[in-house]
Image: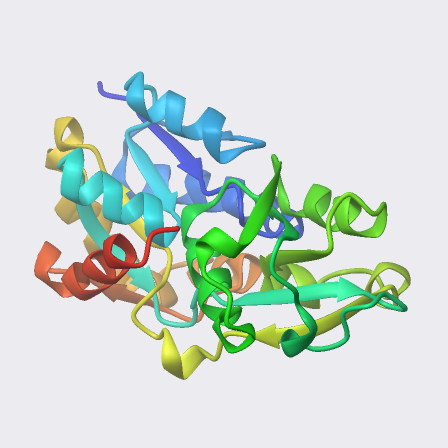
Length: 253
C-alpha cells in the first residue's frame, strides 16, 4: 500500500499546526491510505525536500503552489474559501518610520524567504515610490525571526503574514506599528492550495471528494475550525488557479 508524505507550508500560524496533524490523520482514515506528516521550519528546507521527491502532498503557499503546478506538474486540488495570503508591513514603535511614505530608499526589510510574502510586501511599498531595487532583504528563516530582526535593530521594517501579526501576544504587538496591509478583496484569488505529486495522481479524486464533503463528515467541521478554514473550493483543473499563477510569476521580487 502506498504511503502519502504530507507537509504544510511553513507560513501557517504555529498555533494551527496541531490541527493540521489531526487533519492528516483524519484524511488518512477517510481515504484508507497511510499519510505521514512533516512540517519544516523554513521554506528553503521544504523546497529541498520537494526537489528530493520527499513530499507527495502539500498545503502550499501561493508561490510554491504556482511553481509546483507549472514547473513540477503537481495537481492542484483545492483552496480554502476563507484563506487569502494577506501581508502586513510593520515598523518598530518609536522609530523614525511611522507611515509608508516615511520609508526611505536603502531600507532594510526583514522577511522570511517566502516569495509570495515578499511579492505582496513589495507591492505595499509602492506608495513610498520604492521598487525592489530600493530595499535590501534581511533574510530570516521564519516570520517570528523577522519580527526579532526588526525589534533588535537589524532591520527597519518587517513583512509578515497578517494572520501572524493578528496572533501575536499583546506584549510583542505593542512594540510594532502596522504601516499597511493588503486587502482581501484585492488579492482574493491568491490563496494557499493543496497540491499533489503526479506520482500520486490516483489519490487526487478521492482527496477532492473528501474535502468537498468535509463539513458534513464526522469530525470534519471541528477539524476545519482547528485549522481556521471555513470550507474548500474544489479545483477541477489547473485553469482555475491560472490567474494566481500568472500573477505570481509576473510580480516576483
